[in-house]
Image (cartoon, rainbow, N blue to C red):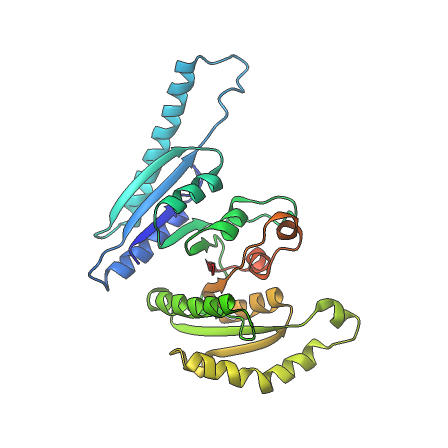
Length: 298
């Protein structure tokens, strides 16, 4: 890893992304000769045309500059508290309302290895928040930080789709394992891998399938395959977990039980109406997880 982009938290709030991002960069830099460079982007925007008295262009410019100067001071103070060690840092203070569009355009021009941002999640079906847009379209790994994490046990959980027939999803599984191993060196004690055998909640409610029976069967037939799969990739077989049921619910409860600091998962983003109404497993999980999440794309 060489380049990390950190999105500063909103003005006047705790700068969680800067603190956690710098902590991670410090930990990685302490073990490698090639040092990470960090870009911090802090956004500000106010509608200056909504005053009861019309502002002259010069007055509007002065107000904008005052706001940007305050934002700069806030970021400088957060960086001092974060105590970066031997990190090349570039700070950009941006006047922009559409954060997601700006970030996606910037990331598609510049080659970053990781995007770090605090999560601001909405459960509204018809509202695509900044987080959802980045999940679907971010060209690099995207680490979404949770502001109120459950009690940590300093574990990392890799979520994979063991039975997928798609070659792109199989490759995504490999990426999930690789990235989970990498981050476990710096933020985890134990690395776990989980596969949730999907069970339709509708069919379960109708009594056509039974989640507990499917789970018992999965322990007998799927768990041995997962243990072999993770062992071949350098993970401990005892840390392989198989459950059956609704993937978002079961993965969330598994992460909670483990006290995972970080959940690493793959996401094949949906767009249009299907993406907003149906969503995908990754997006449903994000609504309920109280851990940091690393989202990877194929």
